[in-house]
Length: 417
Ligand code: NAD
Image: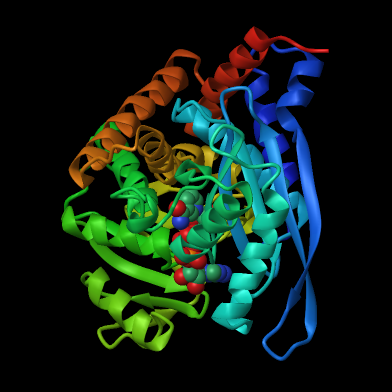
């Protein structure tokens, strides 16, 4: 991983797109800057009676198109600029998907593997107490991100509802089905990554059946993408996690690899492996499709020169640095930007929020169909903008389309006071 500041990456990406729009310096600065950030220190009692303090953040970047929306990450490397960047990407992701939400993001500086479940529950409820005045179905709707899932979302919902003396499942998404979650939410991010890749292959006149695929990161987003691609007839030849990468001459069975990881903690050591690789070796494999699904900045400038994949569908947020992006554009690698490719998570979060507010729940089939049609329509919009305006990349096209949508909403609201 490189040490590029993700907030600077976000600002660079917005600047690159803004030159294609008629936009004033003041408007542009507003589109590049969070509206507000909560920074708080949570004092939490540990199982042995001692007290530990955890730094936590919530950034509300832009709410012109609807309530702030975005996940909560638990990771030792969470910091203020990372949370700011991730919240900004959410603004442009909800706008790229054209769903009526803004962008936010939160995180706690913690390595959750070092704490017991009851300690994590107290940490989460402590953060939820701090968040309660800021969040709500019409204000700010958090969701899971790295190292958080249904369990944490259920705790946050329960804390909020208890403190507010209400029932409001739409205060948070990514919940368990029994707590008001949506069918299809767990698979949504991997699914949109794959649907976007399918559209890109069709655009290039390539067949996804028989295509070779490498997936970096085998968590929620990565493993689901691998599973769906395998179901579509692609050959998943390499997968990885933070311990390393594995390669197969034919195709891994993604479900069997997932079972192995669940049992042993890693994909590394999986019995049907032809060769073990480093993560950088996986990223530079000569495959048809590469899916970075770990953390940001995985593909930096020097690595980009060695990327051999034809198509990259970004399951992770910000996995390619701006300098690496330039290299990939020159090499004519088709990169489907994160703000479309991994938008499935937030799009199905939006469906969950809609269902919570209607108190009327959809079938998994309906969720998947609605998600598919949004990705197909918006991929088409990006390709149209890319071709009609002669833009350098689909990423620039996504930012041009999304910036225009956010700017229109802001202009119509006006500036007050
Ligand atoms: P996760 O915690 O379930 O999985 C992350 C995976 O990445 C793990 O397998 C981990 O071992 C691996 N990893 C970590 N560091 C690595 C490294 N240096 N090299 C290779 N692998 C590494 O997280 P997730 O929910 O799958 O999220 C992954 C990415 O997708 C993040 O960037 C996240 O922001 C993004 N994303 C997730 C969702 C979602 O709904 N889960 C939605 C949108 C975007």
